[in-house]
Amino acid sequence: MCNSENLCRHVKRVKGRSREKGWAAGKRDYVSNRRRGRKRNGNMDCKGIALSRKVIPALIAAFALFSCHTSPTGPHISSNIQLSTDYVACTEVWLKVAFSGERTAISNSEFKITRDGDTVLTGTLSGTDTVVIDTTTQPERTYTYKAFYLSNGQVSDTSQPLQVTTLDTTSNNFTWQTYTFGGNAGSAVLNDVAIINDTDIWAVGDIPIKDSSANGYSVYNLVRWDGNQWKMGQIESTCRVYFPDCGPDTLGYSTGTAVFAFDPNNIWVTAGNVIHFNGTTYSLMAGTGPQNASATRIWAGNSSLMWFCGQSGYLGSYQSGAWLSVASGTTLDIRDAWGVSDSLVGQAEVLAVASDEFTNNGVAVIQLSGTQATMLQTAGLPTTSIVGVWSANGKEWYVCGDGL
Image 1 (cartoon, one colour):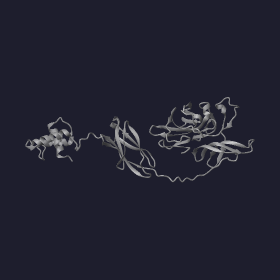
Image 2: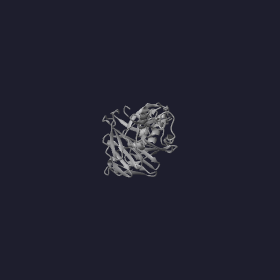
Image 3: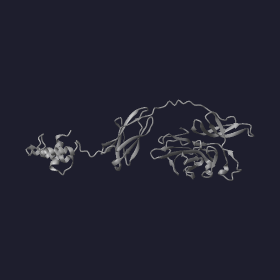
Image 4: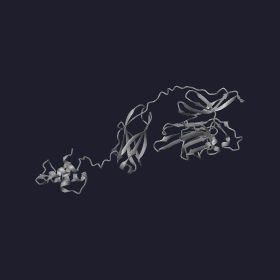
């Protein structure tokens, strides 16, 4: 409710047309007149409840023109700070804090985030948004978060409450079914697999099968699941695609090292060459030149942006039908590459890992973007061998290898 002091301020400002503005000015006038104890028009000025008829219209006008404020705060800017989830795990919650409206024009904006009423994060933002991480959550719990904009350490804007439920842990109780290929004519190995659907699965490797041929066996580099059974296959290639003088222009079978499938009519394989399957026929891709024969791994966000990597630091990029050779910055064998779409920047985040097998030449982690490769720090990783990399969301990355 408006107290008598506020009423006096409004009456005096309307009646006397004071040029002073704000709550403090009105308060000074009131205190000054109160101390004098003067009467105007036969009534105590702003003291008690008796008001002259001349004052009443002014009082009504004051109520129409002014709201009742009990503290000297400036205009409140509402809904200019938003809070949303960017990623939720068992023991982590990634929160996106975004400013809009007049808040975006303020540099080094201070904010804090509370969880169930307790402050868990504070920060400063020089832009429109940022992502912060709460790493102190528990599995399968529901929390309520709020973001607050701070001005001189005081709250001046608040987001809507955001409820977040963390994920539960799993039992890791998987049921495995084993399929065996070859083994009767020497060692067999599978190097990679691509699943299109439950009736179309590709796996590549080196599978010698005993038969009645002159060698006593035949080598297969592909097995395909059709929903009912596995079928052996041979993808032919020739070294003359990359090395014109390598020998007779005859097709042979090289070990399949990687397979990447977009759909049944768009499948890529590395097996001595980079090979594309269009649903009917296989085509040998000339690629970036002789180095492309070294490709042993594939990752692609779409068919217009593909990465091929392999021996001695080889990196090749296939973008919109054109091949590019990219300097990796290492001579180590690039053992794997993986990427995911980054929701914050709207593009793929791709990492590759490199190390030489059976040596101690060190390791490398490489970030791939467009036509650029950037070496990342490897502190905390083994120095002998890392052979795989994977991420589900681009925020948490996993590598595997010797000692991991």
